[in-house]
Image (cartoon, rainbow, N blue to C red; front, side):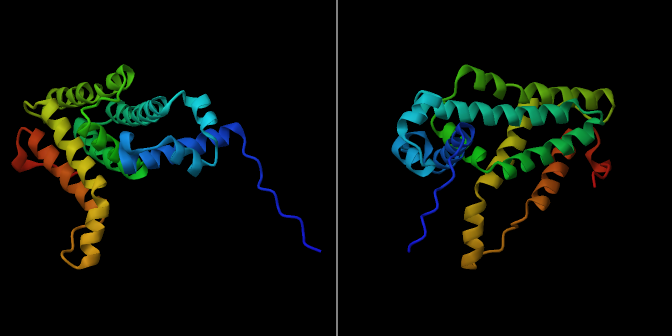
Length: 219
């Protein structure tokens, strides 16, 4: 006599919602907003489209929810670095490390950010844009702290922001390309993020210090 088939345990509404978000992050990162289909999201999350619309209203609603949630966590992490009890030099070094750690921990974020940049930020709502504006003021506060401590000279926080954010964003996002290049034997680019972080820390601090030829070690 055939044993009865095991029934798959029912997912709770919270678990279903979290699965939709996980699948959607992966699809939006891989295909962008325009290339992601609701039918694909529902199939991969093993839910019907009606449930997805019930939770998020639309594909755009789902996308905005993910972007806002991801940017909010990202900005909170960087705010903690800027507001910690430490010297300005220590904070700059920690800032670079936090950027790299966050993009490594949440690999879909840099991909979605790059796709959104290519789309001109057309899918970002006002609240998300507001969160994105905190980075320059936070870096300005670190520069001003370093000036009060007598170690930093004049520096443009906008330039510093794009140097640090852009470098880290690009390095983490192009990991698959570096991996393929290495597998094909064309070159041996550094695969570990630690040497990249260390180099970017030294570059940032050297650009900020009054006397870059007498730099203190950050190791």
